Amino acid sequence: MVDELLALKWVKLGVVVAITLALLWMSHRQPAIARHRGWVMIIIGLVIVGFGDALNIYTTTPAVQALASAYVLDLVRYSAWTLGNVLLAVGFWHWLPLVVAIKEAKEELKQANELLESQVVQRTAELKSANNKLHHDLEERKRVEQSIRHMAHHDALTGLPNRALFRDRLTHAMAQADRYHQKLAVMFLDLDRFKAINDTLGHNVGDQLLKIAAERLRSCVRDCDTVARLGGDEFTVVVEDIIEDHDAAAVAQKILDTLSQPFNLYGHEVFISVSVGVTLYPSDDENADNLLRNADSAMYRAKEFGRNNFQFYVADMNVKARERLMLESSLRRALDRDEFMLYYQPRVDLLSGRVIGAEALLRWRHPEMGLVPPSEFIPILDETGMIIPVGDWALREACRQNRDWQDRGLPPIRVAVNLSVRQFIQKDLADTVIRALDDAGLSAEHLELEITEDLLLEHNQTNINTLARLKHLGIHISIDDFGTGYSSLSYLKRLPIDTLKIDQSFVRDIGTDPDNKAIASAIIAMASSLRMNVLAEGVETDEQLAFLRAQGCNEIQGFSFSHPLPAEEFEQLLRDGRQMRLLQGLSGYYVNTVNSPPLTH
Image 1: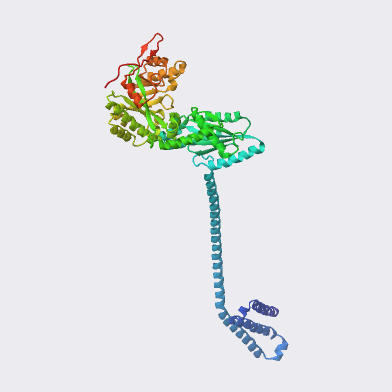
Image 2: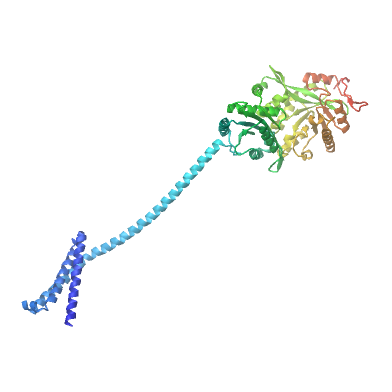
């Protein structure tokens, strides 16, 4: 029992010594703690308590008991414990706020750490979001730059290369041809009748037609070839690696065949054709601009040959192109210089042979070139838009001249005036016609307006209203060149049409072409069933006269009776009473005689 008690005393002393040494070690590591008053009191208290514990152990030995009395030893031991514990209590009392402060500091540090981690996470997320946004902005910028580059070099409507990119590709293709000693073909294409479709069916339909045409053109060439849109209805094609001229001709013919197929545009079945000019490198020229100019000249030659064909460039075409440019320049001044005039071609009734009207035909007397053929200047008027003021002048002049003939004592006749598509779609057309009639003092029944089938591609309410208003005024309406268009026949029963004019292409070969004879007969029969008047254009022979009269045609117009005449000569024809006597001979033909009693009012 005594031994166990002694062992416990040694353990207690060891614990006190160990704690004291640990605190001294901490004081060495943290000098700031060692300077704290409470810390010092704790260490001193531990030392004193340890002294008391040591004294408690050694008091049991005889040597120590011999040195002092038991009372003194107990007093020293208990005093040491008391003082040590007091110092420990006071030390801990002073140390407690520091411990609390440390604990609070640790808590604040923990909270600060958590806040910092939260801020780091938030900032990381913000940086990640900013990085993603920056990446998105960079990608968007790249897309915008690519879009801008694409827009700068491609047509916005069709997506085809534009003029700038076409020229670059043409230059590159020429360099490739030089390197490998090859040929290439440059083609210039213009869609025929596109303006009529655009004006009558609207720009949305026209844009859709251009998109489909672009797709069809791409399908006609290889991937290595280039199809571009220069603007409007003009396209260009570069065909590389041409061995012989007929290779280019085969591509051009494929383009003609492809574009001749019907276009379904918002419920409208529309037919167009294309005129193609072809030039070859390096045989025709070695300059890119000149090649394009050559192809353009060849395209105009294709139009001169009736459209819907292709022509290869020949050297004299540039001369013709310059002449056309000079012609356009002169046309812009012709109206102000009073260079236009009207010729009048008689219209003859096939039952009586009498002249019952005339068609006013525009003529241009150039001060140097003389009379310019209408086929040369009227297409230019239409393309440039000059047809509107010139057409208005022709309408006013025809009304004035007709009234003047009546004032001179001639019997009233009806004069027909051609209206272009551009004139017809003017919102104030009816008002323009009324002013022309009022200014001339001419009755509306003596005016006939000729329109083409192109105008009737879209018999919309606007067109119907315009025709109805003109008809209500008493003006006669006729369809010129009937049978040459692609529009539906349904408009014949819906629109106020008075006369169908059979195109001269069907009349010309009536005697030799069974198909033309059948077409002319069908038109006459159909018009008769619809109670419409029929006039045949371009009648030149007695054989044509006989056939048309036998089929029931009402009127004719052509060289068989008279060429178009200036106003003075046409007036004289009326005064002389010239008419067509229709006498049936043994051959079955009808003979045209000239001299008849003069006409009087």
